[in-house]
Image 1: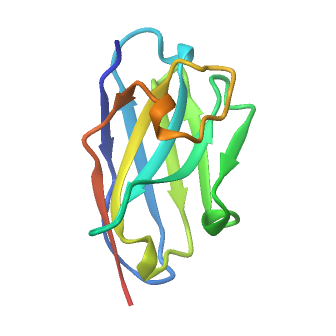
Image 2: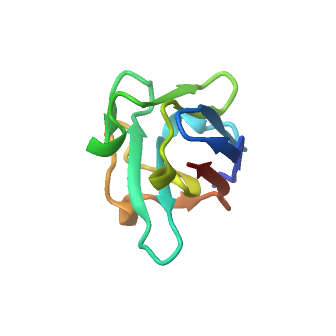
Length: 125
C-alpha cells in the first residue's frame, strides 16, 4: 500500500508557473506508475500526465503538452508536475495517483489504485 500527499498548489497569474510535488510513503515507490489528474468545479476528473516506474516513459494530454512536465525521483519517493505557461482554464484541484501497472504510462483513472487528497491550483487572468 502507498499513501500519497500532494503539495505546491496555490494562486498564480496567467503565464506563471507552479511546481506540484507528490510524496509517497512506503518503500516500493518504484513499483508504481504515477499519474496526475485534475478536476475543475462542475467538471469530471481528467487525466493530465503519466510516467512509468523508471521515468523513462511519459505521456501527456494534448492541452498540456509543451507546458507541463512530469518527472519522478525514486530515491525520494516523489513525483513532480512542473507547470509553466499556466492558463485560467488550468484552475482545478490536482491529484496524484499510483498504478500497479508500473511499466506503462496509464491514462485511465480506473487503472490507478491509490490517490492523494489533492492540491488546489488557481490561475487568475
